[in-house]
Length: 259
Length: 331
Image (cartoon, each protein chain N blue to C red):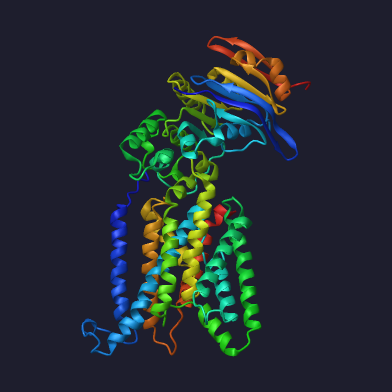
């Protein structure tokens, strides 16, 4: 049973300003939750705090009742998978080896093991990278690499998947594939949280959208409600119109507010 | 498809271990005086028996240990910093260890208690790694690391030069310079006993970091998100490199570039994975130092060429070659 992920009075100061100011929220599993907001709104900082990778100046992130930072690192890593925004791959290892790194928190004396190998194969199948298994990562295209990295996060069978800009660098086809994959994960009970810049994609994939701006949350709710023209104007300074398209709601960005 | 198959890791390490054994056997026999097998079994009858057991056995064992220490330290440093140019010699760690050694020689501390020399050398190496990590921070920028190494190197060189400058007697200068150049020749069983425990402990500590080094392929954030305790890794790396390199330098002086060349040659054979790189790098380091030491012994010249000098002659151009290949990544 996946426990909810929450933040209580999270405050992070950086460079003399509050990147996050007294932010509280509660995220339920089984949903795709998108965090949007302008550059510098604190999306990545919030993700890092939720993943237990950053100690906030005040407040704390919790998994269930337990503070995330109080969990032993290996146990935390098994429960919360994290996909960083600018992933670094230092060495030209094979794609399958990279995906296997996702099993690190499970490694015992015997290496990856039967169960681990099955999880790696499953993750690679889900992201459609099985055919790339023995290619070295330096020979992969940006999109292929992004999918291999998503597989890496899934190989750890996390209860929560926190992905910072997972769609960056993917072509529209693979963006839709990735979104479908995230939806499927959520349906299976996993909690999926991702930051996005593409509001149209957020509208398409998210069960719930949080809009961050000015260090706080200015909207939180179902995508159509959270991404209202008023909220978008306040967050981005951009005029937007929400249409009822034939295949669901669609967002049209008109231009700079007042421009 | 760029499918590459690597040799089985067990086969690779067994092969390298066999190579080390063969070279060790050769190292016991070869030199100015060729010692055939018959002398081995003479139980002291043949005068060459003494050459084997008093000169060549410590020399060979020391070559294996020091080579393994330098190879494993280079591989671990490269894995941790994600920088293929990292090497205890290039980054100034060996020089800092040497400075520690010079201080103990300069003040004549080694006369009463010989273990002061390795202790101060390990201390110098430790300070070197700590300063290096502080100067370079958590970046994986090659330039930052190499520059930090330049700073360390010049600090250590300045300290050593000062000691030479102020040395009380020409003999002290001679002793220090001789030792600084790095060699395996004429080392005693006592010196081997002094260094071996520290080197073995250091290499063993480095081997505890293999999983963390693998995870660090994804950068510090990536590794932390996989449950790796970065502080523990940093501590193990610092302690392991300080012990292994410090104790090596204490007995043999500075032998550079082993930690640079060896991981680079072995890396393609392990699919570039930084963790599985450690063991073959230790073995290949031992093989390289043994082989170079045999060549140095057999070189016909009035005085034996110092191993440290010979390694620098090979390693310098290799470093240039690596730098040229990495130019694009650095720019």
